[in-house]
Amino acid sequence: MKLQCLLLLSCLRVCVLAGKYSREVNEPKPSSDEKAVEFRIAKVNQVWEKAKRMQLAPVRLAELHSDLKIQEKDELQWKKMKVEGLDNNGEKEAQLRRNFNVILAKYGMDGKRDTRPLENNYLKDHEVKEGDSFDDPKLDKLWNKAQTSGKFSSEELLSLKREFQHHKDKIHEYNILMDTVSRTEEIHKNVISPVEGDTKEHTLPQKHTELKQKMRDLNHGFERLRKISHEGFGEDSDFREPRVIELWEAAKKSNLSEDELDSLKEELRHFETKVEKHSHYKEQLELSHQKLQHVESLGDKDHIRRNQEKYNSLAEKTREMGYKMKKHLQDLNNKISRGLVHNEL
Image (cartoon, rainbow, N blue to C red):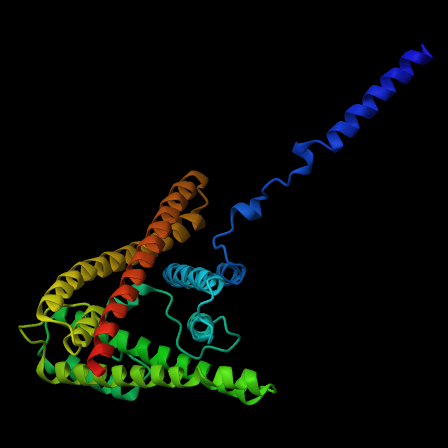
C-alpha cells in the first residue's frame, strides 16, 4: 500500500514539473492590453492612450488618430533611412521631432495651458451666428463685414466661414511652430559640445525658412479673404473647400506645365470630394456620440449596445478616411512644393 502511495506521489510530481516547463505555460500569452495597442511606436501609442484618458471630443480624437498614424508612418520610414545610412545631418529627424511637438501642442498635450475657447462640437463650424469670433481682431472685423454685406447666399456664407475657420487654424499652427522653434533655439544655446552645436545649428535655417513660408501663406490667405469679403465669390471659382483652394492657388504659382496643371486640377477635384465626404462622416460621428450619451442616460443596455456598435463603426470609418485624406493632402503638398522649388531655381 505504501509502495502504491509513493508511486502515485511520484507520478503527480512528474505531471506538475511537466506542466511547469511546458510550452503552453512558459510562452507568454498576449494580454488584453497588448491586443489593444493601436500604434507600433511606443511614444505615439502613449499619446493616443493619454488622449483617450483626457476624453477628447470624438471628432478631435479622430483627427488626432489621423495625425498620429501619419507621424508613425513617417518615423518608421525614417528608421529605415537611418539603417541605410541616410539622414546623416539629422534634418529629417529634427523635422519629425518638430512635427511630433506640434501634434502635442495642437491637441493640448504639451503641458501648456490652452487658452483658446473650447470647441467640442464640430457642428458649430457650420452655424452662422452674430458675434462669431475667430480670436483675431482683423478676422472678426472682416467676417462681420462679410455677414452684413448682403453679397453672399446662405451657402456661400457657410463656405466663406469654413475659409475663415481654416485661416484661424493656420494662425494657431503657425504660433505652435514658432513656439517650437523658439524652444529649440533655447536648447541649442545651452549645448556644451561645439560639434553637437554645429550639427544642430545646421537645421535652424530650415526651420526659419519653414516659418517664413507659413507667414507668406498666411498673408496670401488673409488677402484672399479680404478680397472675397469685399467683392464676393467670383463665377470662375474652381473649388469650394479652403484646403483645396489653397493648393490650387499654390499650384498656379509653381512651374508646373499646362498639362501638369490640368492633371493636378482633376486630382484636386477628387480630393475635394474626399474632403467633403470626410466632413460628412465627422458630422455623423458627432451626432452618433450625442445620441449615445442620450441613450446611456436612459439605461437600456440593449439600446446602449446597438448605439455603441454604430458609434464605434463610425469612429473607425472616420479615422480611416481622415488618414487617407491627410496622406493625400501630404502627397499633393509635396508635388506642388517640388514645382515651387523648381520655379525658384
